[in-house]
Image (cartoon, rainbow, N blue to C red; front, side, top):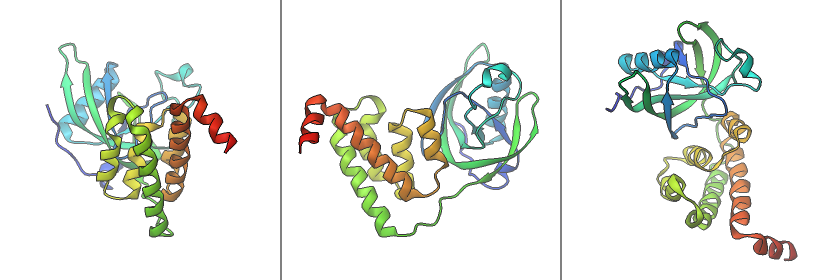
Length: 226
């Protein structure tokens, strides 16, 4: 089934259910597939679908194990998304696809039963200091991605087309981060960075390093000699 697609509005952010996960960071424009099996999160997903709500996917902070079944600390900045596809399994579990709509900052938690609910504020990008610099950085990122794309696998192989179709430099950066960055700490840092030029600069460095690794040790040695 396909769920209705709500828009991210201040009203949506006034009461948002939390689906906290370890080492998961949702970027705007990223699609994330999840399997939902815990009873409290089955209830959350059911409410989100039936009421056309958004949900927050904050990353759990290290050390969450001791209070996982309570309300362990989460990173305040996280992705807010909508469920775009779902299947309800006979035993009540769900398979869902969440599309990132934007960044949000957790302001305060409202309740924790049967699942955690909080109030959020939207986090828009910082105004660009130089649109020309943004476009130059986006062009450089696309050039580097084009070089590494043939060596990528899975959804990452389609990244060049997705980057070209991005509406702006910010969306381009978020698509690249959501697709190419694996380290949870690096993902969280990029999610929290509201300056698009800095996100693009960090991604350019990452893809350049990725290209060097994919090219093999011979290429890396040659680069050091030149």
